[in-house]
Image 1 (cartoon, one colour):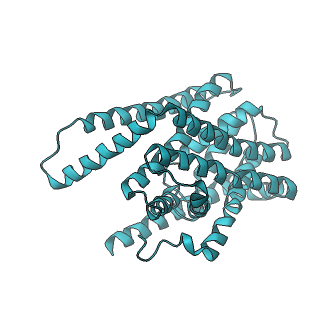
Image 2 (cartoon, helix red, strand yellow):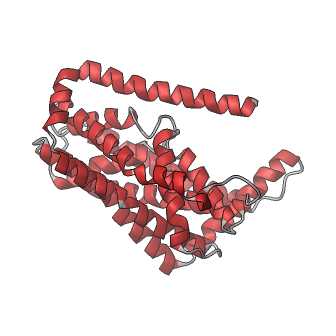
Image 3 (cartoon, helix red, strand yellow):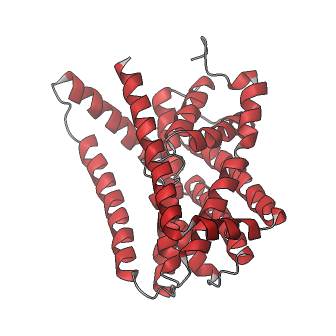
Length: 319
């Protein structure tokens, strides 16, 4: 009961943070002007962006299926796609990335993958997306037309990359450490060792790993295209490569589970990053809200699957 209460408390705190940040930004920028920008976007453009974001589920499903195959538990992508749709839905309703990823891991277990390996597969899937965004951001940053703030962004990318490298080194070092005598530390050590084994199994299969990263790259371009559609609709004059850089940096930051579906964090970042290009806060904020709304709407098929597909219900003896 205490664990459930803590989770609910955490969810409430994240909801308050998301709503508070969005409301504070809207108040500071000027909500009246923001509404005008929102109305300026045609429904055709909004529908096109939503459709683009919805197709992300196919790239994620294929990528996840490839990772499960590398880890020794090949699964048909058709058996996974429903849970990915539902994962998208839960990611819009629960703290960033956590709820949907837990559901996906449980679904993989339901299909015959050991729970620990299922969790590893979702972590690897998530990590490849972040890594691709990080690589793209590092490549594009030297060519950006930012008037200022480049050094801060360089430090951000460097810090994320450094943490990733340190994490891998730490995981490798712990995997070579003898077991601890304390039961709690021994259990944690065992889990880290199995995670290292999964990461190593993934890394030593270059063909499938390459396919996973290719699918991740295609998937990361979808939010770039959706954001570009809104930017064009609002006459935001920013080069395509800079829009891509802004989206990649934003996608890295919004994976931190401190808000609901990235709301608030994304708005602040897009206002700041577009501001480095000389874009006024109002249209930048409108782009972020439109993106968040289209992303939420793109997860709607998950709600239909939750209602009508009994095979996706994770209750009962199957778990």
